[in-house]
Amino acid sequence: MARSARKKLTLPDLAAMKARGRPIAMLTAYDASFARLLDQAEVDCVLVGDSLGNVIQGCDSTLPVTVDDMVYHVEAVRRGLEGAWLVADLPFLSYHDRASALSSAGRLMRAGAEMVKLEGGASVASVVHELVLQGIPVCGHLGLTPQHVHQIGGYRVQGYDELLAQKLREDALALEAAGATLLVLECVPSALAASVRDAACIPVIGIGAGVDVDGQVLVIYDVLGISGGHAPRFVKNFMAETDSIEGALSAFVKAVRERRFPGPEHSYSGP
Ligand code: KIV
Image (cartoon, rainbow, N blue to C red):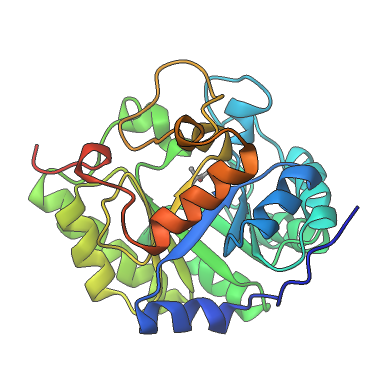
């Protein structure tokens, strides 16, 4: 497979981007071919998301995804990727205690991930701490956490209520204190996301969290307009503006870097 001559991005590079106010562009990938295209488009971070349960396996949630599934896709993405920072999701019930978290994260790192992502706040802080102690970089995920879909009561915006908003800010700081070095914030009002971005020293990457964060992530099939079904408000089909996959990926990166995406039409304000 042809390789791009791209400098390898590191965790300190991501921290420096937040410090410099340079937005981080992140997309999901599940195979080597798209990983290579994401490198060519100069995406900063690639996420092998457990969204593969939805977009690859056709399930209606991420709950059926296993560590074996994740390892298969991380290995595939690793083979195609050179420069971007590679994050992999710890799937549902694979990090509920110290032993399972270490074993699952170890498998993802051996498969080629450089960081693992997990859902939850203060309740998973001890797991985050343990992983970090063992040299595994951790990305938190707050707001709409799809692994909790049945508890939340559906895929809905989180943090409209001030008590919940305060809890989310505290969760972000608990993750940071435990050693997390990146945070994904999904489906929260823009003002809340901006307050988390201001409070946290680590980069905050939004999805449906407005433009006032340190970067943006989307599912690649949403960017290419091929996910099917009802698209959430925060999704933008970048294929509508171009005639090639490469063009759509570059347009996403450019729009994120120039803070033109997400616009108000892709964001949530008050209740
Ligand atoms: O699984 C995933 O793709 C994700 C992103 C939507 C942030 O967690």
